[in-house]
Image (tube, rainbow, N blue to C red; front, side, top):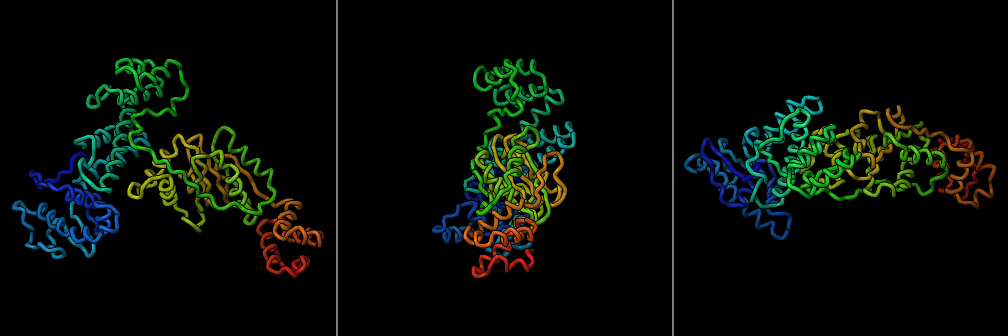
Length: 481
């Protein structure tokens, strides 16, 4: 799959002459060993135009018949003598299972699977400070490509999506190996060639490692002009922003430009808390960690404060706002589930969302690179749940609410009771100024009886709003909680 789509049986290459047959086979190979519904195959090969669906559904069995013949024995006949859809013997490679098809192929023999497995293992090895192992895995992974373009000439939306995903992973693997070349003191790989597309990231890795002289020498031997000249000018000027500078070669796959706006609606009658809002704004504007924890007992308004603050701060994060409830009311407490929803919101298609937490985290950070995004995490249970969801870019930030321990390494804002004046103002906004003017003492007494807690105050106000004939003093004999 890493080049032109080819299949072999033993030493013999099988003939896949029809483009649509290759497109169907690509879908089945990605899901090898698992049933693929007919509808999914049709959408992946022909698209989702409903008006043509019946014709495509009727034509799919013929395509499967040709593929089954191609993948069968040396004489091209269908093993077991079965030729009709749904009547395939157990020995066939391509089986019809209910309303789905399954390709019985060992995934270890698919170059795409082997490449992605080795790339993931190399990423883990780098995290575990095993550069030699990571370099060997990346070299093996890149060696599986027979051409620069995966699924070359295979039509259909599924193949196009997989082609873009694999191109991005190949570029990441190539640049990662260049960085390891520098770390291990190796020469520029001969198979990459002395071209600006490879020299620039290699020189950048040298410069980030403090080897500016070697980086300039490498750039001097490359073709003049373009990005090589731009990087050389930066190095001669002793630029200090190399850590965030990305070579053009790493931008071959277009970055999604979707800007998510996931914040819950702002609280219409949000009252007071001016000092706390100022603390939150100052904490996120200060140098250092770009997250702040909002803590306090239940019912004191942590979530309301965080949501209101996020809406006020949103103009400073023009690339979007992400939100997740971590208390089981929305996505649940699993960081991988939350990260998967975040990368989809940032523009990644469902098929390109990786399954593991580490890969999700890496993709999440790449999507946030160079962007200003605010992340609101409400109801965190602890640091282990939250850390994978925190942005690492200096332009992005996170607001985290919790009833437990504050998140270590960042500032904390503690929410307490409202002041007496704020409690009265909250009741006034809910009940209206006329009702407050008729019973000012009763309103203050009600606020005090509710211990100036926002949740209790809103509950008391909702009872009075539903009973307009009641005097405020009627609630003083009832519990506000």
